[in-house]
Amino acid sequence: MTLKKLALVPLLLSFAFSSSASIQVLGTRVIFNAQQKEETVRINNVGTTPALVQIWLDSRADSKISDKEDLPFMINPPISRINVGKSKVFRIFQTDEAVNKYPQDRESALWVNILDVPPEGELDANKLNIAVRTRIKFFYRPAGLKGDAITAAESLTWSGRRVAKGYEFTAENNTPFHISIANYKLGDDASTQTAGGMIAPFSKKAFVVKSDKTVANPVLKYNYITDLGAYVAKEYRASM
Image 1 (tube, rainbow, N blue to C red):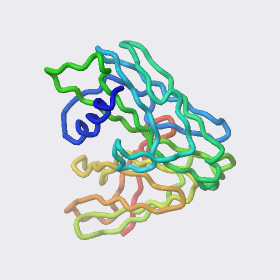
Image 2: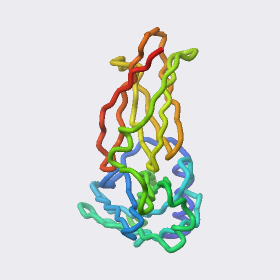
Image 3: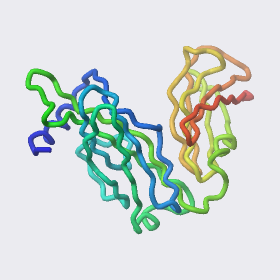
C-alpha cells in the first residue's frame, strides 16, 4: 500500500458516505481468555472484488483510524488481501505485558478494528473508492475470575424511578464481566425502544425511557447479548 493511498483513508472516512462493505466478519465480539494465549477473527470476502483488509486493536469507543495505541497484543497478519469468495483467519496473541497492563480481577474491554480498503490495482479514477471500517468488541478475560460469564446478566440488580420526561432504570453489575444490553423499551410500547449500552464490571448504568405515560409499576423489557452474540429477552418490573 502506498503512502498516497494511506493518506486517503482518514479523508474518505470523514464523510458520511452510504456504502456496503465487501467483507463479512464472523461473530460480533471476541472473548480473549488469557489462559488460551491467542484468539482468532475470521473474515470472508462476500463482495465482487478483492479486499485489502487491515486489522488492529484499540481501547476507545470513539477512536479514529489515525489513532494508534501501544497495546500488549500482536495480530498476524496485520494486513492481508482476501480474494473474492475466500476467507482469512487473523490470529491475535497477547504479550507478557498484558497481565501487568490490565486488572486481573475483572474483564477489560477493547475494540477490534477491521478496515476494508480497495486494493490499489482495483482503484478506478472515475469512481469513489471508499474504505470501510468495521468494529467489534474485544473482551480480555483474565484467568480465575469469580462467577460465570454465561449467567452474569441474569444477576443484574435493577431499580427504577420516575424522571421528568419518562423513567430511569438503573442496572447494577456486581460481577467481573461486562454485560451488553442491546436495546430496551417500556413494556410493549415499541415507540420507546432505545439502543442499549455496556455495563462495566462492578459498576452501575442508567437507562432512560422517554414516555409521557404514567405507570404505577412500569416494566422495562430488554435484550442482553451473550458471549456468542445471541439476544436474550428479559424484563424488570419497578415498584413506584
